[in-house]
Length: 96
Image (cartoon, rainbow, N blue to C red; front, side, top):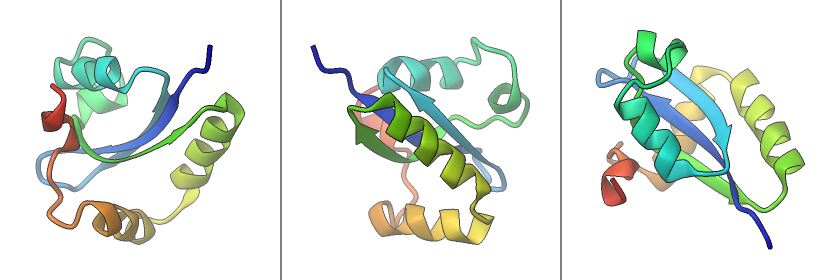
């Protein structure tokens, strides 16, 4: 059985903070972020809007990509988001 892994970027309502994460269940993880079920960075900074995500079937690739995205400057991440989500809509609204 093949698994799918997701690398994703969240932001807060004022789009001043980015959070980059990796998961094997994007639907569940977005639900957790939106409902603040896990304390930490996203709860503290109110990051729950899904702006960007990538899929892969290799966890090593997902983790490497997450680390790569975390080190990119904010401006680069914003440009990446604009490429697939020019209106900066919360993509999780499509499935939550």
